[in-house]
Image (cartoon, rainbow, N blue to C red; front, side, top):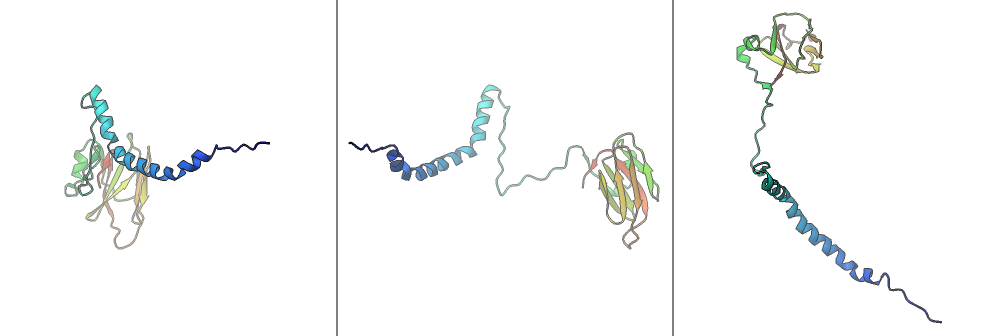
Length: 166
């Protein structure tokens, strides 16, 4: 009787020590390649349609400035209620007490002037301890709720149909 030895696993055992270095080398090659893959992709796209693709690179030291949203209105406190009154996307209320309003267009921002300060409330509204503002699709509500020393009476309220920048 003759015994046959199987050599099926022999090749795997012999090449097993080579697997970690091969993996390490492939990672070392693929990482720099991945960083430039957007450049390669843009070059291929631009070959078909010139200037269709552009790669933006940002250095770690150089940060892009934070931009205000395009549809954001820069609020000028020095203009008081006149900025709102002259705008086509704002309604000015010179009511001191709690009030309700039913707008025909959704309101994004409510600005309350109390004393010499302005307080901005964004949809859906909030309660900051002095003023409670609720902004819904078909109703805007505001009132003074705080009695603390810093909670001034409301002089006027501006309801903006657009986002007012911080």
